[in-house]
Amino acid sequence: NAGVMQNPRHLVRRRGQEARLRCSPMKGHSHVYWYRQLPEEGLKFMVYLQKENIIDESGMPKERFSAEFPKEGPSILRIQQVVRGDSAAYFCASSSGISGNTIYFGEGSWLTVV
Amino acid sequence: GESVGLHLPTLSVQEGDNSIINCAYSNSASDYFIWYKQESGKGPQFIIDIRSNMDKRQGQRVTVLLNKTVKHLSLQIAATQPGDSAVYFCAENPPNFNKFYFGSGTKLNVKP
Image 1 (cartoon, each protein chain N blue to C red):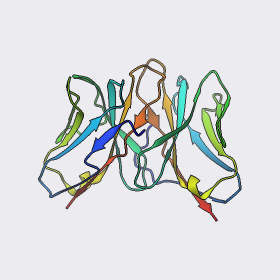
Image 2 (image 1 turned 135 degrees about the vertical axis):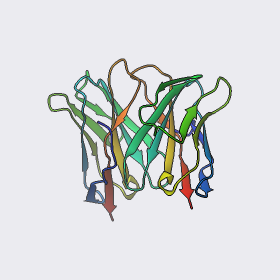
Image 3 (image 1 turned 90 degrees about the vertical axis):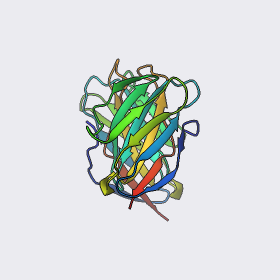
C-alpha cells in the first residue's frame, strides 16, 4: 500500500472551515475509492471514482461533501463547513479498475475538527 | 454488507497460539475476497486474497478458508506474534462490480 499517497496525514480544522484531502493512486491505477473510519469502527464506503468520472457516490453525505478525480493531479475529497462529527480518518484506495483486482490503501488522513 | 458503525469485537490470544478470525459476507455472488490488517494509526494492509473457485489459500503463516455454502471466510494465523496485534477486515467483491464491501472488523490482541 506504500504506493497510494495521501496528504495531509493530519489536518486540524475549526468548525465551519473547509477540509481538502488529497490522494494520488498507485502507479498504473486509474480508479480511486474513499472510505471513512471512526475510532474503533470499520471502513465505511464513501465514493468510487475514475478519472473525470464519479462511478458510485452512494456513501457520500448529500451535503457539504464532494469528491473529484481530475484528468491531471490527485483525487480530492472536499468537506465544506466542517462539523465535529466529521472528525475521522479518511482512507483512499486505488485499483486498476478491473473487477476482481486488489485495491490498495494509503495511510490515511486524520481530520480533527475543533 | 458494509460496516455501518459497529464497534469492533476483540479476540485475545496468547503469543505462539494459533488465531482464527471469522467473517460473514453478504453477497452469495461475490467471487473475490481479501483480508486486510490495520495497525493503529495506519492504513489497511493487504494480507491475502482468495477467489471463489478455491476453498483454501495459504500464505506465510496465514491461511484463508472460504465456505461459499454459508458465506463464511476465516483467516488463520499460525504461531501468533505480538506484531500480529491489529484489526483485521475481510472484504468481498461481487462479480463485474469494482466496489468492495468490508466486514466490521475484528481486533486481535496478542498477549505475551
